[in-house]
Structures are given as C-alpha cells and as structure tokens.
Image (tube, rainbow, N blue to C red; front, top):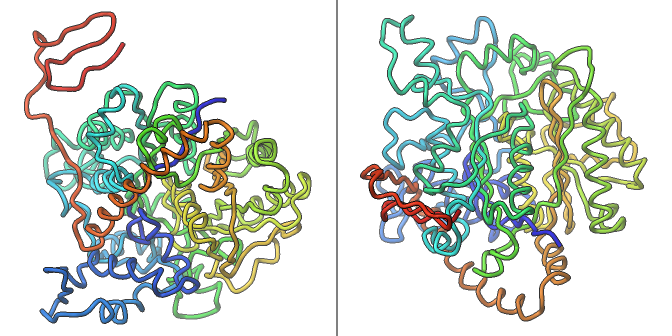
Length: 563
C-alpha cells in the first residue's frame, strides 16, 4: 500500500480566532456545544483580543480588576456568540478610499485587538507574512512534538513546504510600497518588491520557522489555491519524496486596491445591494455572507491557515496524533468557456472523481450515510446556482439521497487562497465534535438553488461523520475537490496496513504527545502566542561545505542533507 498522508497538526488565524485545537471551529457551533466544551475558547479569545491578561494564573481586565475564570466566560461569551464573524470595517482610511466607488463596508477581519506582528520581530514585514509566521508556528506547535526532535528523525530535505498568497502582499511593506511610494512623495524600499512576491509565505516558513531544505513553492489556482497545494503535499507523502509536508496559505487582502478591484467586477457585497436585499435602510453587516441564500456578492476576508502532513510510517514511529487523513485531491480546468470568470464544467469532474474515489476506498455506505460537503459557498448569486446544481447532479447520479451541505464562508467570509484551508480545518472540528455548523446567516434557501438529493443546512447538525468533501472553485476555471477521512476511519485503514504491535506501541507514544500538545494550547490560551522566528547568525562558508555521493555537510551550520 502507498504511504498515507496523515494530518498530524493544524493551526492558523482568521476572523474566528486561533485554529489549532479546534478553537476557530468551536466558534461556529458554540450554541450547540456545552459550556464546558467552549470555555477554553472563550478564555483564549479574551486574552488574544487583549480584553484580559493572565498574571500568575489570574485574569486581569483593562481596569486592573481581578476576574475569576467564570467571570471572564460570563462577561465575554456574548462577544463569541454572534453568528457570522464578519464585521463592519473599522479602518477609516480604507473606508474613505473605497466608499465613493466601491461602497464596501464589511469584511472578515482578524479579532479586534489582535495584531500578529506584536509576537515577534516583524519590522517591515507585510501583514500577510506576519500572519504566516504566527500561523505556521501555531500549526507546528500543535503537533505536540518539539520541532528539533522531529528533525532528528528525518533528513531536512525530506520536508516539503507549499504556501503562498494569490494576491501577493499589497500593503505598504510589500508591492504596495513599490507601486505607491513615488506617488506619495516617498522612496521605494529595497524590501518592498521581494517581500511582495506571492511565494514569500513558503520562503518565510523555510527560512525562519522550520529551517528546511526540501521541496518548496506554491501552486496558484485562484480561490482553489490551498487544494492545489494540498495535492502537491499529499503526493509527496504518498510517493515517498517527503516524510513531512507543511501546506497552507496566507492572505491579507483588505486593502483599498483589492477591495476596489473585486468591487469593479461586481463580485463583492456592497452597502446598496445589502440594503436592497432586506429592504431596509440599516444594513445587517454580520449576516452579510449568505451562501445558498438571497445574496449579492462575497465578503472579502483575511486568514492564514496551515496543515501538517506526515507519512503514516513517521507518524506511528514518533507517536504523532492523527486528526484525519487526506483521501485524494482532484483538479480540473473548465475547457472552452464564454467568460474567464464564469463557472464551467470542470467542477462536475472534480466532485464526481472525489465521490467515486471515496466510494472505492471506503465503501458506498460510508459515503452515502456518513459524509458531508464543505461547499465553496462564496455567497454570490452565480455560485449558489452553479454549485448547488453540481452537488445535486453528482449526489443523484452516484447514489447519495440526502447529502448534508454547509459553507464556512457564512461565518468567516472569503479569504481567497486559504479559503479551502478554512473549510478543511472546520471539517476537522466536525470529526472531533460531531457537529456540522449550519449556514445561520440565511433564513431561507434561495428559490433558484437546486436542492434535490441535498440537505443544505441552515442549523447545526449533530452526527458523527467519516468523510468530508471539500469543494473549491476559482476565477479562471480553477476547480478542485478533495476528501478527508476521519481519525477513527483512518485508524481502521492503518490497522489493515500495519501489524497490531505497531499500533499498540503507537498509542502508548501518542498519549505523551497529546499531553505536550495540550500544554502548548494552555500557554497559547493564556496569551503566550510567541512565534517561532529564527535567523541563521552566520552565513554558511563555502570552504566548510563537504560534498560526497552520500551527503552534503555544511560544517555544522545546518543539518547534513542526504543525497
């Protein structure tokens, strides 16, 4: 059997907060979970948003008052239970720049008070790269095994990193500096252009977080970009090119230029359109993202999400926790089409292939009764029709009678390149807690949405699932569909491949790994979000490098690499 790409760590930051340990997921189903299940998430948000700080295990608010854990939860829970997590833009400069032409006043933003650049030496780094450092650090630390210990088990060239940004880095420290400086009477800096490159998230992870020397880069597929990179990472694991892979994306697109650009395409929800939908003078900003409902455009969002994959051999050897596995990823273009931005037939191919692959691997019953769909669900009139038609046609054709469908964009908006990473990480939470978050921003499903053989959820659904289908569609005809397998089902598959003694030894190691992971989570919840940010103090000297047919030695400055 081929190696199995296991998900052993995940993390990041977006409008729902920190992703690791399912905290961002919990915010989407917090009404359904018990207070005990949601308590840690609320406490963590309170510290992240600087509403309280932790001193000697006591919570101190901004007025210097000491609060008990129960008081913090009671006071700030209302800030957590707010349905959709998108909110009215607070950046006055952005609003002023865009209001006349774009009339856009809502976006999915990082939690108020949280600034990723505060947690490491981030001077002159674009926001998207600040988010990369913190998000990738969160994902790696969530594994529960010290990174240096992992490096001691594998060659550094056996680690892949696939990460990028569709829109590059367009703020004042990236391409924004190159394009705006002269117009503002300022000078172009030496760092503006290189730090703006779309592949720079992968470069930052390699150079400052992991110190790896394996395959790297970023496949770009518009709003399906994360799945394009997940495909490369999973393939590396399966064919033995890599033992470990970090895959993810970072996007900080809430800038005047990007907002105006998407608005000019009539892609974004504007104030005028939102008001017209509800026939009101005031706008319900928090319920602006409405997949499969009466909608008028998507809500732009910022997010940085990363997933850590390991081969099953390595994970079992070191006791890494298994949060699920990557079943397969399918990618297809649309072929000839009328408009570059219009939907085409490619997504029919990817969804069909994904379902058939899962049926062959896991059985028809598993797919028919224990799978659900994380739809692209971009909250545009065109998407609600085209995607519902695709899902309905596939379900009817391949024997699925009532396919649960949800869309995480209803909570966090559309983060472009990390959008399908938002979907993946939310699905891992569904595996863990057995609750699919419903699309609660809509009262009714739109009249032109195809519902045959589908169960488009407007409320949370409690049920254990073994398969999650992740669907992504992007401008230009970029289509991708992946399916994830639950931890329990993944263990079943591993039992067929590995001897019982191997699994018994693994479970013993896993217990201590879980304990270490929980220790990191506790520190992070208390506000210790320090990023991993390392820089090589001295350059590698040419005369200290030794090369032979077996390996390259860098004189101790870097790990030895096998050839």
